[in-house]
Image (cartoon, rainbow, N blue to C red; front, side):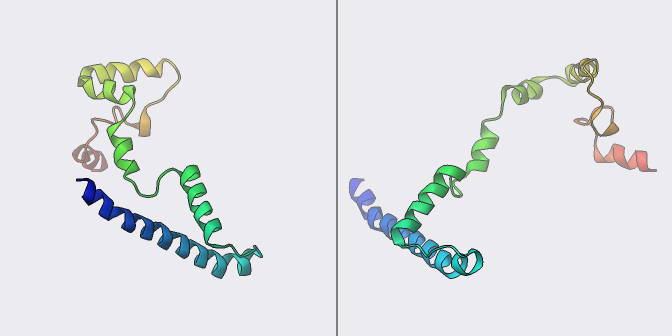
Length: 120
């Protein structure tokens, strides 16, 4: 198993070198002429990629999937409620100044069939 991972290491280094080179070439081709910035070298391009990774957090690593799997406690509480409990929750929240969402009685139970009946 270690030999398999050892074979991936050169591919990993090649990918880093490729991304660094592409970043350097794009920067040097576009930004000095558009914004008057200085040209950068390969190592500065790699540093720019690392900075982007730190500031933006991930580059297509399935972060949306992660967000949907780890929703907050209110989401899980809502999913466990019965329709009656949801109606009671919505009526209780109106006492605190919240209005009905989208001018509908209960937006979670509002279906397309009901919308067509309203439009008739």
